[in-house]
Length: 185
Image (cartoon, rainbow, N blue to C red; front, side, top):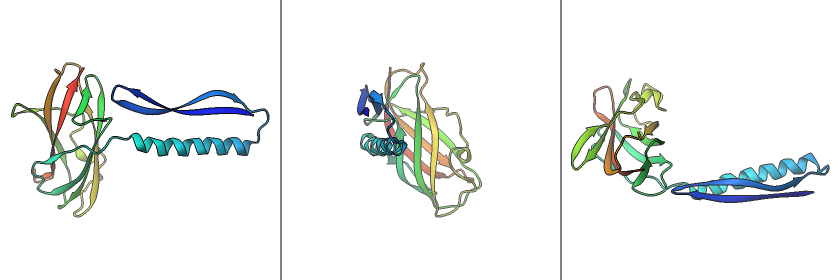
C-alpha cells in the first residue's frame, strides 16, 4: 500500500492555512479500518496544527461599557495588529462579553474614528439578537456577539480606529470597544 499524505502550511500575504496534499494513493485491498484510522489521524493532526496558526485576540480599549464587560475580541482573519482589512473582503467579528443587566433587545452601532472625527459605519445586521445573542439578554451571563464586517472596495486605504457599541433597551452600552485597523488594497 502506498499512501503518502503531506500536511502543508500555505501562506499567502497575511493569510495562513493548512492543506493536505495527497501525492500518491494506492490502496491495493488495504483494510478499511486502517484507511479510516489514517483519515481520523490526519483530521486530528490538522485541527491541532490549525490552532497553532490562529491569530491572537485583538487588542482593544474599553470605551465605556456601562451594562457589561468585554472578555475577548476576535477578528477573523487577522494575522497582525492592527488588523489589515482588504478592500472587497468581509471579516468575522466576535466579541465575548458578560452582561450586567437584563435586556429584551440589543442594537449595534459602529463608527470609524478618523483624525478624531467619528464617521458612522453601516453594518449588514444591527440587531444583536440576530448576531449570535439569544435574547432576552440575562444578567450575569456570557454572550458571543458574532457578525460580519464588510470592507467595501470604495473605501480609501487608511488607518483608523473602529468604535463598536452594542446598546441595550435603555440605549446604554452592553459593550463599547475601540480597536485600530488599516484598510489596504
